[in-house]
Image (tube, rainbow, N blue to C red; front, side):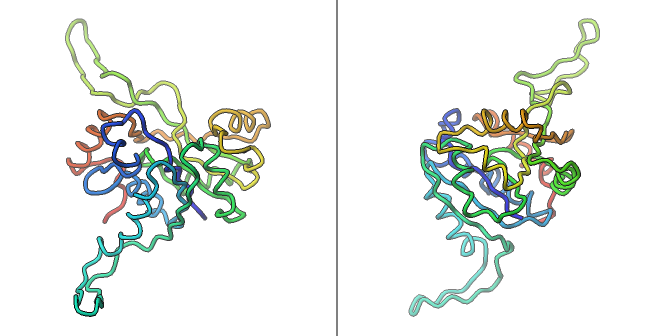
Length: 257
């Protein structure tokens, strides 16, 4: 199965970082957040990726072109340029990189990926959200209902810190926790290829007419994920993710190495 990842947005709310790089290349720890997302899918055995590029997409291309030499150990003879691998690259991902235009919107980017996706069920997500979601359970749920689309829904992260009181005494203080109320789009989708009938042109916004029309037709189901989810949207979000990663207990790190 293919994993489509939308990587082309301009990330305007994170201008401190995205002025010089596309948002999926903003690093958490030593790796771009895109790498963290791909590691999640790879952990469950899905490592055939199709990336929809746009804003500063050449940086994502260069990252993967150079990944093997960056990740592996090797010996190089400067005289003839021969390279002797000493330690192979740890990843065996297949990555298709597709320029979907700087101005395309989410549905338009996905629409442009149609020729590169096999005529079968596929995953789709955005290039800025991490989670400890069980991808195989998400897929099993999708296959159980027989509809065209599944979206993982999650509890949102509070905009402000949450304080619990006992009288006037503070008994709990949590900095921007996930709330226990309501559900929002968590950005992890499973689609059947027939979903492309709902997409029309570069200016299609996936989260508007396509998903609304899937709802109208009774073709969209929700998989409730109660675990960790966090979206990189602002500099403050980056700071939260960095602290979690540096602590060694990042909830989305479900892989061993």
